[in-house]
Length: 159
Image (cartoon, rainbow, N blue to C red; front, side):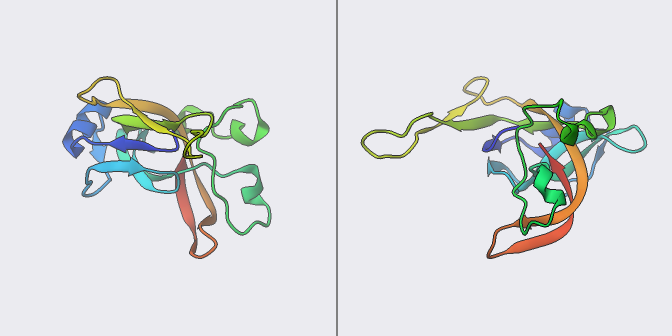
């Protein structure tokens, strides 16, 4: 997945693109900036085997999420699927795709004048057609949010 992406297509276009037989998203607005810890649509295979579109929060639980920590920020890029922590979610029932129209990445180094990194948007072409990130999803109980506004609930998360 990505730490900043956009989804600027209609819900009907997303359903057709993902071949979702069921839509559990509700009313979906255009999403010009989706950050980790925000809910966005994901296509997965439901318990009955039908492809469905659902909302999930970005960020899989970190290994420390199962210890006594106050807030778990989640992991959006799983780089070592051989890790024992991730193995439990590698089965087909935990695989999904995350539809997007563009994503944004920062430069490696800050601009020498401003001291800030430059963020650049990438898309397949100027029309920003749909594409998808491969993802894994899980259900977990934990504390998300910020120190000022922690939220405890059962989550469906994607990374």
